[in-house]
Each structure stands twice: as C-alpha cells, then as structure tokens.
Image (cartoon, rainbow, N blue to C red; front, side, top):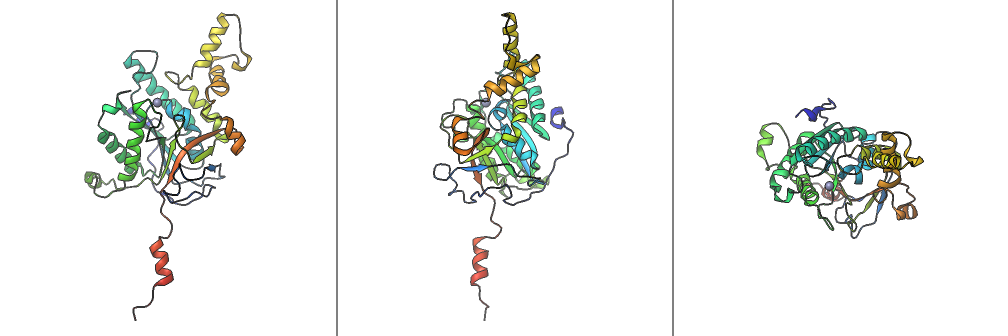
Length: 327
Ligand SMILES: [Zn+2]
C-alpha cells in the first residue's frame, strides 16, 4: 500500500527493557488492576529513555486516538519510542461525502494526523465501519499479531477492551483483538508460518487502554502538558469526522452574520486549531478534577498494564539465597 511508506522510514526493531519513565509502577498485573490499585501519574522524563523501543497506537477510526490518547503517544515518541499507527476500520460512514469519498478523505487525513504526532508509519486494515462486530475477530487478531511480531512492538496504546458504556462496536472489537494479540504474539506455536518466514514471536509488555466513555476504569493519568500543542494539531486534522474543521465553519457562519470571535483569528487554519483548544478538548484532555487532584492542566487517562518481566525471577532470587553444594 502506498500510504504505508509515506514517511519513507525503515522498520525499527530491538527492545530495551527497564523502568525508566519516572514513576513507580507495579509489575504485578493483579496489584495494578484499575479497580483495586492506586492511580499513578506519569510525567515527562528528560532525554530519550525509550530509545530503541517500539510503540503501536491502535484505533478504529480517524479521531479515536487524536481525541483520547494523542498526547500520550506524542509524549512517548518524543521520549524515544518509534511509533506506528494502526487504524482498523475504513471510516466509510463518517464524512461529508459518499462512502467511497469518505474512505478516501479519512485515509488522507489519517496520514496528516499521524505526522503531527511523529509516527513513523501507518497501517490501515479497512474493515467496514460500524460493522466490525460482524467481522471475524480471529482475522483482526491475526493481522495484529503479525504486525506486533514484525515491528517488535513493546508497548501499545489503544482503547478499553471491555467496552463499559461503549456504543460503538468498532471500538471494543478492535480493543479486544489488541488485548488478545498482545499476549498471543509471544506464543511460539501460534501461526508457525510466521516463524518459517523469519517473523519471530514477540510479546507486547506494556499496555495503555484509554478511557473512551464515562465510567471506564483508569489507574494511570498521563501529564500531556508538553504535547498539548501536538494533540491540538492532530485533532484539527480530523475534518471528515471529529470536528477538526468546526472553527473555520463557525468563523464563516459568523462572518455571514456580520460577526467574528477574536479567539478564532483571521484564517481558517487558526480558527480550526483554536476551536479545538477552547472547546473541543474539554472533557478529553482537560478535566475539572485533574487540576485539583493532580495539579495537571492537561491529561489523558488509561487502564495501564505492565507485564515487563522482573530483571531477576523469584526462583533465581531464591536459588541465590538458598542453594547449597551437592555434597
Ligand atoms: Zn471511534
């Protein structure tokens, strides 16, 4: 696919493990469960602590990631991750045109949007929009497993797989396939033909599942103050859906009525960007209680799961302390 190589970058590989991102996250998945664990605030870390690591952001639709987890993706990429964006649906039902026109405009805007956040490459699955619960989940999962292995993905950022309060089947179908593929991509006996082709098993160890609907659980709040401008730009690129052109539309409407809003500036680009800043991201990146509770101006919320192995297993630690000579 032509759009796959739009940045002309090679696939990066190699995993670097290490808890270097400035928080004391638990590596025990049980202890970190969102319904029983404490909320951890993840802040910026200077330098490139994630250099050599690979991030995959997975979304069903053009505007899922920009609205709910773009700031975090940009932060992780700025801190050294190589980022890939995977979009599962074809977005045919969302846009001002016919289905065919919507597929094209969403595809083009998705590429522009990915660029604002520093992604290296984009993959599109083109599953039929709003019908993904009728599509084979095994197929979606197997395509994700292939990409996770090929790209050697260490960390995913996606949506809540359990879909509490979710009305869009594309969201939970995508997220559930992500959850399953993260685990299964590390299994040696699944999809043996990958091994024959030189694509080796590779587990995804860190998972950020964004809050998409009110009431979905979270145990991590990411400070996105340093990437809020990138997030705003990414939202403004989502014009077929997601309200990225709301500012220019409002500016033009007001002009016909002989009025203008100074915050929208003097051109469409500024109007779109400033509309996102002042109106659109409220409730997605600015929350009344985030400032109060955590002192954050801009944040995104996730159910975070850390499955990185400890540097030394419990058994090895026990052997060190307790092994005695054979005789
Ligand atoms: Zn969506």
